[in-house]
Length: 183
Length: 388
Image (tube, rainbow over all chains, first blue to last red; front, side, top):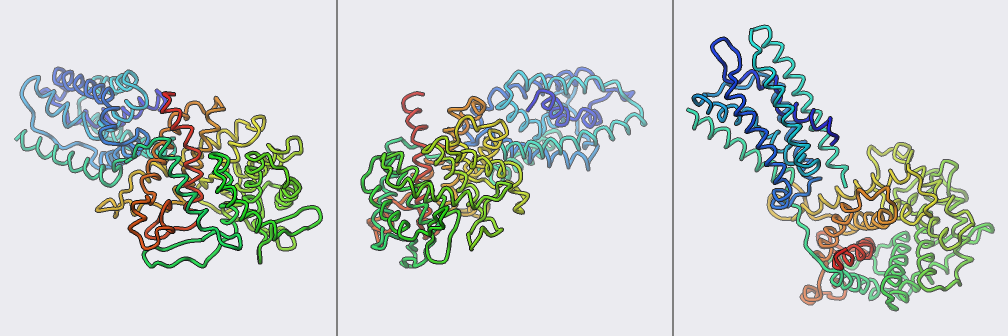
């Protein structure tokens, strides 16, 4: 995967537009900064850890990186399709204070199955640094969306989220084909 | 509340992971083998072919161990393939039995030549095929290199001229001669023809055989699959052999790119095969381990491309992956071969030892393609054992 495609893939997998719709919020509808920072940092750290361990994980699973790419593509297509149809994630109960960054921001909102498989396949193919930076760029976009509030703006977020969900499907198809054609 | 939702999410994640693991990416099981074990496997498989040379120079076609029936069928193109692979074995191991068995089949073919004046062709009763002639010619070229024997040079040039006569202006190859080249193409005769011409070019440099070979190579690169009505690219092991044996100055970027794509097709075939256990739910999802001939073609194609990749820096980025797939493929092949101990328990040990079976049946090309794959893999394993 090229660097640009990796950023697009993580942006589509994290889908900041869709994720923004299910973040802990202040009373005026803005995203709460501390949980977002905690959850975002944990998500990027998780991606970095998965990328770091991708080799041993795939060896333990007895799957070549090339074949795992097919699995990652399969998961991305399913996750993208689901996110396109269910454009607003279900509301989750929140832990109090900064711990809301752990639940529900880090998990299940940001560290979805599509992010996990993408971290593993990108870690094996592109290395830890490129993978982590791409994930960080996608999460930064989510930070930028934190102040967004208002009914009309939320509708815009939903449609942009759908566009990224469709992009995730495309990324999944591309990963599958690339995994099939890889040596 | 949070715990309940966490349990729901984690359960869904685990179930999803299990489905992906079982249905999409089962474990790729690659038994480890040594070069010595691969050489023994080649000897055993060649032994199956050598034991079963018939008095008329044919080879045993097939055997079904479940019914005990020895096949009465025959296929002349595969006959030529066996002649060729026996010469490959002789070239690699120096086994005199392999040379003798190859010569028996060759002698039969040389007694069936059609002399057209400007070319000669092997014409067993009822057929004059480009594929059969190409494999016979490839065998003769390998024999010439291995033995230094030039006695068949005139026949080789005659066969090569026949293959050129079977080429159409666009580089495609007619499958059969019936007073003229008929306008049909066989699945593999195109690649077989190109390979034979590439090998002859090595034996008789400066006579234009390589240039004739690349006409067909370029047809395979650009038009073949669309022109012959295939939805996807044909993973053609003969094309891989051709590219590996072409003169280096004929390896344009476009042809190298074709080699890269072929490596991808062989790779997915080998990776898929390594996921097949043939038991339980894996059987439902992946079916039985594939036919030895089919799997062998992927192994030999990859082996040929390995030779190309080790010589051509444009393929250096895929050389490691190619080596990994080859090591995996030959591990599976050695693991699936009938051992002397297993054969000793069989009704016909002589028809089982050294062979590969698919659901109880083996036929000559199962041994042919797998032997070539094993021979092509030997340098990879030897290099790895030497720490290279």
